Amino acid sequence: MAHLHYITLNNYVTESGKTIIPKLSYQTFGKTLHSAPIILVNHALTGNSNVIGDNGWWNDIIGKNKCIDTNEYTILAFNILGNGYDNIAEHIIENYKDFTARDIAQLFALALEQLKIENLFAVIGGSVGGGIAWELAALKPQLIQHLIPIATDWKSTDWVIANCHIQDAILNNSSQPLVDARMHAMTLYRTPESLTQKFERTKKSNSLYNIESWLSYHGNALENRFQVAAYKLMNQILRTIDITKNRTEFLKVASKIESDIHIITINSDLFFKADENWNTYVDLKSVKDNVHIHEIKSVHGHDAFLIEFDQLARFLKPIFSTQLKEKEKLEQQVA
Figure 1 (cartoon, rainbow, N blue to C red):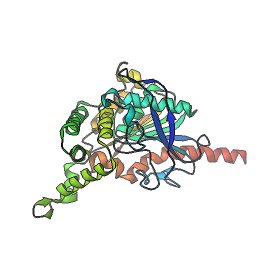
Figure 2: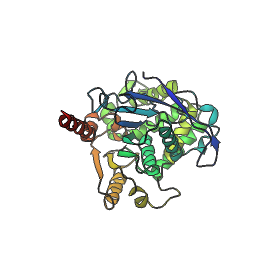
Figure 3: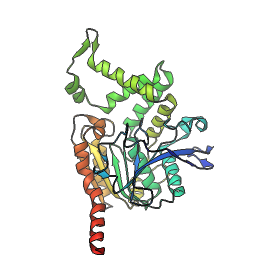
């Protein structure tokens, strides 16, 4: 595993007005920082900065000679404040509702400044990580060359907020909050068709269906590697994605983003609905030329961005091979 590095940001004032001294942790992979184009990868709700390697959650997409080639790029991944992976943030988070998705984007932007990173070749993230990518792009419209939000949106819809509200109630009232919240979430991350395909009403025992066993397994597995405080905070961040908050309407905010925007949606996503993404694309295309959309076709719903790697790689490869082609052309000119 790549070593964790740390950055202290003095006297940050949250959107809610609370002053904190946060310490962010991060990992880098591939080329040494500042020696190659930099790709910022934002993790999802229960994820972390360990993008590749042992227990790396995106080994299928990122690595040597893979779609995002670590021979050619620097991969940077921050741990979202309070995700528990680094065990350093608990003492500053007295109230998880003090934080928003924009706060996390602001902290990332400040950390990038400390690292003397003035531009990013790409920012990519799935689910809440993609929402933070939208927030960062709105904060720093000239920072990112390619903005790649996957299975997410520029705002949390009423549907997302409603389910985050249910998650918050479970996390605050259940006798086994992590297990129960995770089981509920898993039914949102998949589809009825996906579960039917996987289990077909089969039983593990006379009194236990395989779907029940599977849900319990995922609930217990999360309890072994995650913390209730982290889940509460990440759920709060998810429910507060909104690049228009205290600004103006969406098109005015988004049209200022200079990045090439590559929206990747999932046709069966029950959480961040494909229709919302297509509406975003159509509206944004009316004021901005360099916006694109791709749709993963899958029975598996929201989690398809962690399952359908071949489709995802097909959409991503043209973006990340462009840089390599330009490098080859330059090398030929020098030769």
